[in-house]
Image 1 (tube, helix red, strand yellow):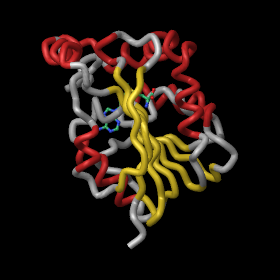
Image 2: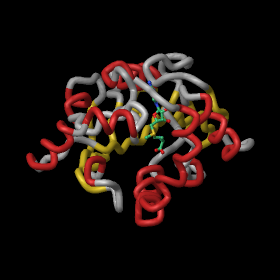
Image 3: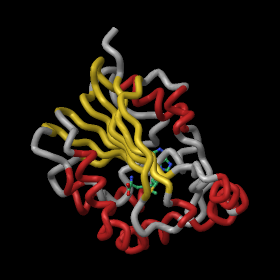
Length: 206
Ligand SMILES: C[S@@+](CC[C@H](N)C(=O)[O-])C[C@H]1O[C@@H](n2cnc3c(N)ncnc32)[C@H](O)[C@@H]1O
């Protein structure tokens, strides 16, 4: 459920700025240094990952379902990337057409995270990789209880974001093979959305 798309998009970079400067931008750069070849990003938002893609990326396509977010991503991308309005659950790409799929902090908002991972698997070439980080349900039971209690109000504030989602479980039941998964923190984020899950997964070569 989404509530205020235009204002959310307008304030997004400002709200994230503190975390980006405190280390989130480094987390993005570190993750994206592994991207190669034809790279497709899902839920690219305002395009905060754009500046971190390495030269090994030969073609970059950003997808984003929200038109206000997509407009900002287009402005940042210029001629470096195409921006297509599409949800992660229904990607307008051929099977086995991408070397790398990237998403950062989208499975908390996408209505059907299972379907997003299935689409990522479909669009990846065999041996292709998914690079991701997500804010997730805390492993600390006290914080997880607060995430449960405040999920409703947070969903309003975060324009549909589910702060208590146990996202690792979606990877376990997906057709992707998890290569690495690591827990951490989003620097200077509010406690409800501080717990971080980052990693890589691949589409097995049949
Ligand atoms: C918290 S923002 C993250 C934006 C960006 N990936 C980043 O790292 O800054 C969540 C994004 O997920 C997008 N989103 C919502 N539903 C989605 C879906 N079904 N598939 C893909 N992205 C979706 C939202 O429009 C928004 O841009």
